[in-house]
Amino acid sequence: GFPIIYRQRRIGLNGKEFTCLKFRSMAKDADARLITLLAQCPESLREWTETQKLKTDPRIHRVGRFLRISSLDELPQFINVLRGEMSIVGPRPIIMDEICRYGDSYRYYTAMKPGITGLWQVSGRSSTGYDARVKLDTDYFRLRSTWVDLKIMIRTVSVVLLGKGSC
Image 1 (cartoon, rainbow, N blue to C red):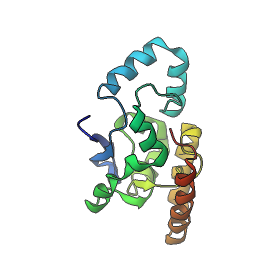
Image 2: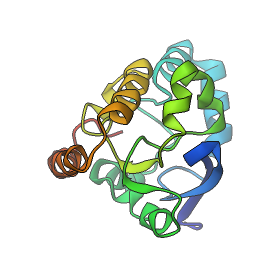
Image 3: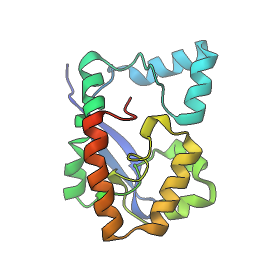
């Protein structure tokens, strides 16, 4: 159904907010469903608190599951790249509620543009806890170079083709 593009405010370079684009992979009322689920299911609340994701997310529709496994849901973010809001490689763009999870590392996160792919995506994605994600973003800041970006882009191809860590 419509809309097919999901828009969400995310944090980018220098802490500036921008509208991140994705193909919609969840039900239209996903935010309300999440609140209800987390209030009713302590196990889902624990998982969400740890990772900001749910392995078995009831909000994702059938086509959305395919979009996520194939990473095709990210394609509209190339528009964000063309607008200068994102880069191809960098940390995943975060929402305002996630800033507190970065602590002192938030300054590293905001010192670079978020990316469509990055060290986190090729190092486990959804199977990685949030603390590890923050460490990977900080490591990327310290290691970033054209060579590192090229290696991440090459690894992204195999991760996407194998569907590793998605959903």
